[in-house]
Each structure stands twice: as structure tokens, then as C-alpha cells.
Length: 119
Image (cartoon, one colour):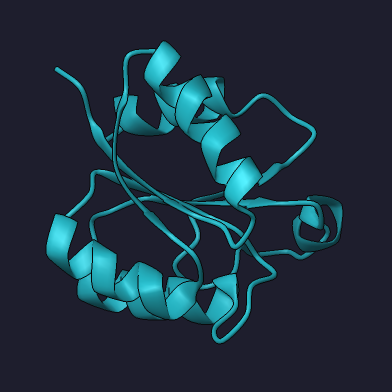
């Protein structure tokens, strides 16, 4: 059964690439959001099984959004998909609300499959 995934990134081209990759792997992309505030609204409305979240976005960045998303949907895993993964991974702990950090240079689908297998 397809799993509902919310993609959050301010770059429309990247959202399209992520959508194609996920849908080709059999996942359902139930929505897209352009920033953290939009992500919160869409997550409330769509109740996704997984959220893929960019770090650097206007209005509300990924870390701020992850804290709020984790508060309203505490059982939904959040993958931080960012060009700054190495910096974040150097920290001893993951940022609040974040399940895993994936670099935008890595293949996203295996991380999505692994995360959803644990939910």
C-alpha cells in the first residue's frame, strides 16, 4: 500500500525531482509545501506518514518547522534533506523532531524505505 509523503522544499524543481523519485519507487506523494509554515498547514490537513523537509527555507526554516511538526504529529518521522547534512551530523544529537539527516547528494529513496519500514 502506498505511503503518504509530504515534500517540503522552497525549490520547485527539486520538489519535482523528489516527487518523481518517490512515485517511481511506489510511494504516494500526498502534498508539497514551499516553507515551514506551509508544511505545518499541509501536515495538519494531510496527516502524512513521512515528511521530507529542507533546512533552508523562507518564513520558517526546517529546524523550526520540525519542532512544530513533531509537536502536532509526534509519530510522523521527519527526514531533513539538506546540503548542510555534514554540519548537522557532526552534532552529538539530532535536532528536535528530526528522525534522520540526509544529504541532497545521497539517494533519498533507500532512506525513505528504511524509515517507513520502522513505522
